[in-house]
Length: 88
Image (cartoon, rainbow, N blue to C red; front, side, top):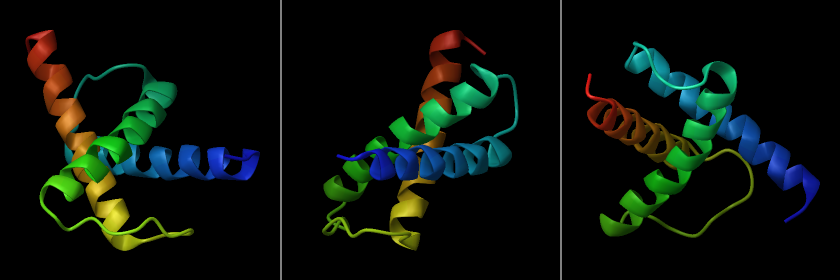
């Protein structure tokens, strides 16, 4: 994985995490960096969810709306889990 791919995942994660935060406002971890981390990990969780639901396909370079939707879903799942663990 090259530098360009890493930057692409960070940007993709930032956007997915920001959309998830917009859909679920409230006090959550880490501000800007936390949003990026939630988005990146959310993309991984979303990919796993897509694979379980048998709607995941091959990974293609560039922006894919289906991948983005599942990244946002994964980010929302992470936010729900964080809030559940945190107790609020």
